[in-house]
Amino acid sequence: MGTTIPDLPILEAEDSMLSRKFGRELSNYFAGSPLNRVGFLRGDHVFLRSAFSHPSTRFLLLNELAPLVNEDQNQRHLAWVNYDEVKHFTGPDPFEKSEEQMIKEFNSEEVKPLILLLGLDEGSKLPAPANDPAFQYKNYNGRPYFAVDVSPRGSSAGAANKIIEAVKAKGCTFFENQRNMGLVASEAAMYASARSLFDWNSRVPFCAQCGQRTLSVNAGTKRTCPPTDMAGGELKERGPCASRQGVSNICFPRTDPTIIVAIVSADGSKILLGRNKRFPPYWYSTLAGFLEPGESIEEAVRREAWEESGVKLSRVVIHSSQPWPFPASLMIGAIAQALPGDGEQIHLGHDPELVDAKWFPVEEVREALTMGVSGLGEPAPPGYKEGGLRLPPQTAIANRLITAVVEGFVGDVAKI
Image 1: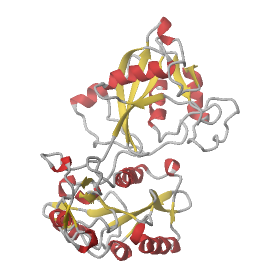
Image 2 (image 1 turned 90 degrees about the horizontal axis):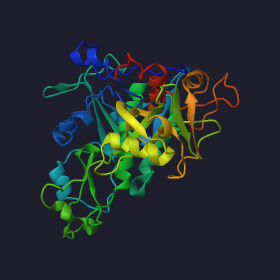
Image 3 (image 1 turned 180 degrees about the horizontal axis):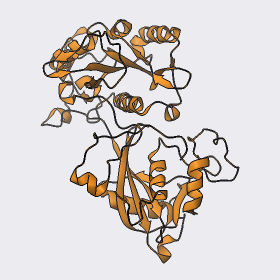
Image 4 (image 1 turned 60 degrees about the vertical axis):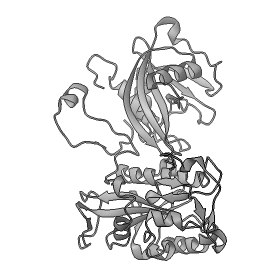
């Protein structure tokens, strides 16, 4: 239905009891990274030094969260650079010091490039020159991948502009339409990780407890509030901070759990879709909203459905999930059925988020999945007839939930 996206199995093909009972595990766009994240090595500066400068290592550059890409005749791809191309911006050995040393020598006046370890390509899943030397550290091997934020800021703006101009001279560009990049799924997953973490780092430069500037550690995946500061050339004690007490002395990346649900009528013949004022004409999608503290996923689905549409739900089943790096949501996809009778009545008076909500016959939705799928902000696809239903692209979990319903998820033989 519409343009297909690459298959993204999390697990290799297998015949477990769970797969026989519930079907194959599902994975959505922006998930399925080919890399082993080796998160336990992010604090090992010996590993980071070795990996960062290795001849096989590749780096993804982001400028204001836009990834460096190149394009061939049919496909856009992430553009990777090597150590020699980034070292003049990052410095030749940015992981020379341990985290303990970095905290002890912290200088809030210095602006250092933000570097993120993406992981190791242990299974040679990504294209690579055959003559590259192999990287190995202890029992771990595979090509290392990093991401580097080259956004021109502060004292590093000059060096950032130089590397930006150098890669542009090679024919690469920083692609700004990040929701409709057209990347193959494995590359989209790597970009999603980099984008979310760079965005998070840029949003929390100061400590939430004491308001003092923080330091990025753990290869870009944590921030800490150092007790001292070398600003002005003299080591000074900083003000007290509650984050340095006990075990809560680290700031971790934010991930916002968000439910998204395809709602089916009580008799299974219709699908509830809504639209807000940002959507183009005739463009509808599934309902979604953030989880609240002390709320289960199923409760959040029922609450959001009622608040936005007035519809009351019976059974809620979790379908699949999707990391959504705009900026850092985890979309928890569900399929639910409305209660019969009054439960299906639409009322938009509770929450003004939606400007419209409708029950669409399954057959009309089936046709829209063939003729009316496009990204938000993109023109309708060829063959679309004005006035017909339009739906989100296959890269959005909303599309996957709608497709699951149309293909019989709610029927007698459906599998979770």
